[in-house]
Structures are given as structure tokens and as C-alpha cells.
Length: 166
Image 1: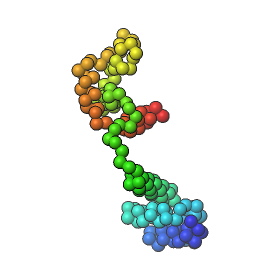
Image 2 (image 1 turned 180 degrees about the vertical axis):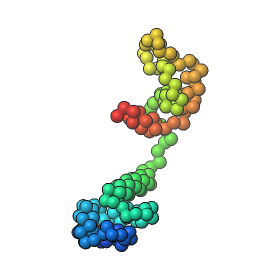
Image 3 (image 1 turned 60 degrees about the vertical axis):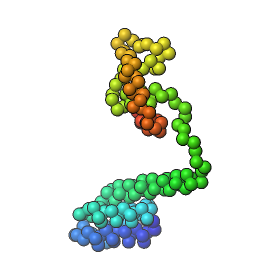
Image 4 (image 1 turned 90 degrees about the vertical axis):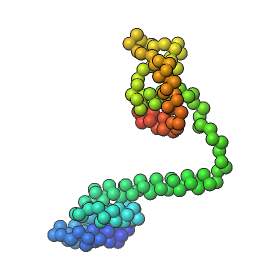
């Protein structure tokens, strides 16, 4: 934002939350601190501060609100682009992205939802536990988890795994 915009925002803060803290120097310092920010996002953040805060926002608080507005704006933009893209793209067949075996969804349900860490036969080429201490998942539990995992989107599995791995 420009210097004048920053001074205007600082003056708005000072006029909405009047107290003995505000003088020419403090308004100028506040303006200098926010001068590099985006003016539209800062105004949206200031509007939220007016609605939510009883005391004037410190620069760090206003910045946190501004960054939150920036995230919301980016998310809204991504949703709009996705909507436009979906209107342009021909309808896709109802198929799963990436052809994943059914047991992967069941494995995900067992691990994440039920915290069942027993080994699945598909995890080992030999089909048995690697160590004597590892317990194999019984066939009835395998079937139940696979059935429960039918509706789990692959994107959710990938997101959860990527959060754990890295």
C-alpha cells in the first residue's frame, strides 16, 4: 500500500480506539509498520478487528488477521478456479483416480480410524508376519475394514499419509 494508505489505516485505528497512546509519532510508526502490506487485505483485516476486538490491534495482531484474510482469499480464488475448470471440462467417468487396490482403503481405516496396527498380508510378499511379535490381521477383520473403507476418497488417504511422512 502507499504511504498515504498506511497513514489512513493507522488514523482509522487511532480514531476507532482512541486513548492516550495515539499521537503523531505512534500513528506514523504504525503506518511505517504496515506500509508494505496489501491495502485490500489490510482493510478486510481491520474490518474484522473492529468487529471482534475491544482494544486496538497491535501490528502483530493486525498482521495475523491480514494473513488470515490472505489465506481465505487464496482459498476462495482456488474454489472459483475449480468451479470454472469444472464448467469447462467435459464430465468424467465415475472412476477412482489412480487404480488402488481395495485393501489400501481398508488398511487406512484400520490404521487411522481404529488405530489397529496389526499387519496386513498385503504388506509382506510372503503373506506372514515379519517378526514373531507382529500379529497378522484376521480375515474377518480384513473384510470388515475393506468394506468400511469403500467410500474413503483416495485424496484423503494421500493427504493423511503425506502429513505423517512429511
